[in-house]
Length: 169
Image 1 (cartoon, rainbow, N blue to C red):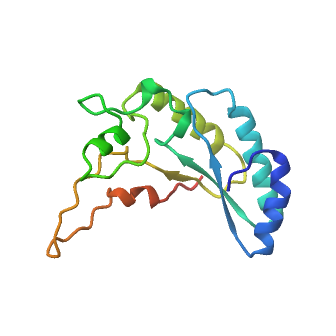
Image 2 (spheres, rainbow, N blue to C red):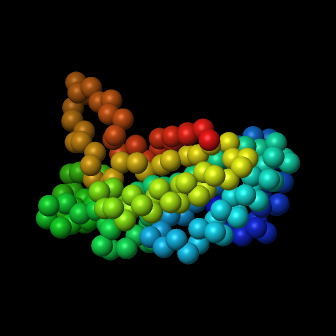
């Protein structure tokens, strides 16, 4: 769920409770700037309190390498030709593997930023764990073999964005 403000918490958790949900994955937007961290932590804290009251476990959900429009161009991952994952995917039509531009996991700024944000949110009392998504930079998936005789069971395929990782706190 995407909570925009503390005013969204009560009606959202009331709706989740009426629908019988027992978990709420709260989206945590990641950006290069830490200016919103205090408000994000406050929002997660209030959500965790609402979850405790309503019997709903709260899991902050991070898109670790997919920062969307918040990704500074200098931190977007690029291939040896200088192309972003979406640019490379358009040029090499047979791949079609990148539908977003991920930040590079090799930049020290990315590591520091993610460590700070995940640590701050992870310190909130009352969360049930964390959901980490987009752990595989776009464009790093191996090619899928073609043909009916090819066995394909790659955990880092284009479906990797759908895999959720739970980290108990």
